[in-house]
Amino acid sequence: YAEIQIQAQRDFGWDGIFIATDSCALAHSLGLEVLETDLGVAPSPEGILQSLDDASKLELIDPRTTRLNEWITATRLLSKALGDQVLIIARADQGAFSLAAQLRGMQDFLLEVGYGTHEAQIHQLLTFCNQYVLQFAEHLMAAGAHVVTIGDALASGSLISPKTYARYAFPYHKALAAAIRERGGRLSIHVCGKTTHVIEPLANTGAHIVEFDSMTDFDTALAAARGKTCLLGNVDVPEVITFGPRDQVVSECRWRLERVKPHSGYILSSGCAISPNAPATNLHAMVESAQEYGRY
Image (cartoon, rainbow, N blue to C red; front, side, top):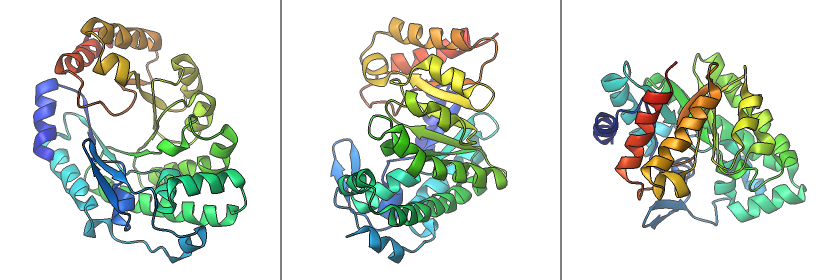
């Protein structure tokens, strides 16, 4: 995995590397079954908890005894090989809200959150999940990650309301950011989908970086983040990076870079994971746009 990342960095010349393989590894390491698909693995929809009461039976384990150790090892290898040349961002997936949903079963968890009848048990599960994420993040930092990042897709404004985010996701994002800072590290938070209505609290979590998808309004995010955090992302993946012509990729990158001058506070990146169908020419176009229009 490290060799592939090193070769990709040499081929494309990007300034940072994300270390991650899939978005259900933490739940898998705790016993969740994963399903094989053409595009990788996906979490089993049933979860491993028969009810929220079972959250009290969960026990923290050493992530180094699971396949998460491959992420830790890759982080160490990449830090040694490229740590003085590029930003090493190691993903401590998932965020507490999404991890809790995977462990309980996504549909059941979201329904229980919506009904609001098991709040104490939900918070007990979320607390456990945050502790496990932090434990994994500590190993990634020790391995040389400049930044650790979480993906909390189910905390998206495309799925839950701002009120639900404030009650069940924000406190755990904020607590994790504080814990990472106390350990001398840097945290980045990625939330998929439309986060325009929760971008301000995301900026107030204390995270060093907030990763935002293309559905989130750029100017709203920029205003919310100014002086609080650095933004990363926003370039559309399906329509622009994957199927758009090269000129469109350059245009989409350029206007974002021009918008943040002269203050910056923005890292040019795709809004979410890049499709395997994205042509190499479009990835080169992003890097070249950053070099041409991101300097001032």
